[in-house]
Amino acid sequence: MRANKVTDALGPGTFYYADYWDDMAQNGILAALGEIIAAAPLFVPRMPRTGQPWSITMTNAGKLGWVSDRDGYRYQPHHPETGENWPEMPAALLDLWDDVTGYPAPPECCLINYYAAPKAKMGLHQDRDEQALDAPVVSVSLGDTGVFRMGGAHRRGKTRSMRLHSGDVFVFGGASRMNFHGIDRVLHGSSQRLAATAPFAEGGRVNLTLRRVNPPDAG
Ligand code: MD6
Ligand code: FE
Image (cartoon, rainbow, N blue to C red):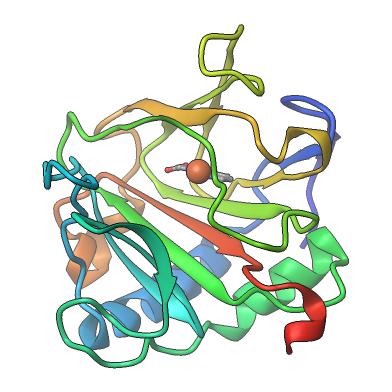
């Protein structure tokens, strides 16, 4: 399904699709996420050096997962607590990637961020741990509405914000790929979508980001 594509929604190289996924498709993804989390439990990321916990929990699917702990940010093929390889990326996410990016290689990582606590947020940051910087990052929002903030290449630059709703897809690439961005807050209780999926029964917001980490010729 391809609804209402907005080009350059938050700068050159960004695309926004309101309601990319309908109710049935969202529920299908959530069921797949329930299985992923049963195998690869949500964990609390920590800040490099200080070890301070983030306000969200996370896990991953795909060949590589993104983790953050005292040793820093990195991609690795296994879960930091179980030591097991990450579960496979759901087929629907591979199809999404092909549909909205046209990139010549599939995503290697699906990072799953869960904003359960009403105060959970994500500070302004750049996504810069990938070598394939020519590939966009594709973001899917599920559950409560998130207030997404987009800045520029410098942390202190001008910013704009936009609300991301359940089922929305946002593509973040091109000249905007290295822009600072974050989630100011989640409009807690704005959606009932997550209630039926066990690991998300307390509600809140789930964000998926699909990433290509290595250049296409790396396989
Ligand atoms: C979130 N998203 O929406 C956080 N990063 O919860 C991100 O940090 C993000 O949405 C890169 C590209 C798209 C994103
Ligand atoms: Fe990000």
